[in-house]
Amino acid sequence: MPRRTLATMLVFSLAGIPLPARPAGTPNVLPVGIITQASGAHFNAAKVSAGATIYEGDSLSTEAEGALQFRGSAAVIYLPGSSGIILHGLPDGTRAQLQTGSVVFSTARAGGMEIIADEALIRPVADGPTVAQVTMIGPTELQIRARRGALKFSYRDETERIAEGASYRIILDPPDNTPAPFPQRVQVAGRENIKFKIVLIAGTALATVWALLEVFESPDRP
Image (cartoon, rainbow, N blue to C red; front, top):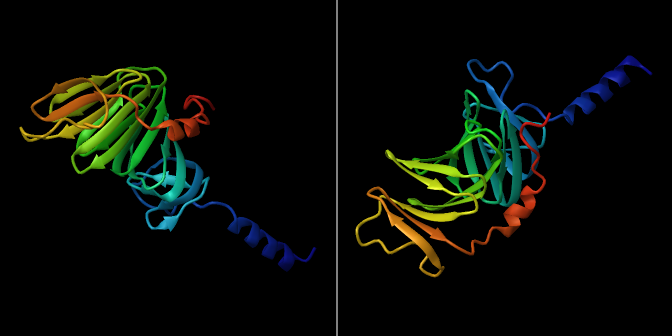
């Protein structure tokens, strides 16, 4: 085969290989993980595909019908449609700053995953399999569900434990006359803090997301 033909074929074959999200020579920027599945997904303003490397401070987002799965050092993150996060590395895991929509994560380590949403911090209580979803309802409203394992919710020096299987609707910095969240649903239990109002709710419609999460593998698997 002529060398020119061989070189041309090599160029076209390399063109199909997913490239890192940032140039390899970018100084002081460390990789935090890779994209394992993507459809209708973006890295910043560019389309992103499976195999792309994601670096410290990169943002990921999905279109209305899109979906994305990311694997970090100790956690797997899933973004459903109309969602966005900014990723940062931790000494033993990954931190995701939720910008819009929902984020779902799976980890086996307490330090493997942290979610920042409206200045609130959500993380596993202890080592062990943990799967959870955090959704931004509005500028100061969140919904959190602990699918597997317990979570620790922290906001401005106040904390709350979210038990395995529980779902909470949370209003941050509520005024005194704020009505209880989700009045159209059954309020199983409620508690008011100085800095947030938290109500345990029932009947959350998350079946579609959890069905997609069945493909999650343990983050500790090779």
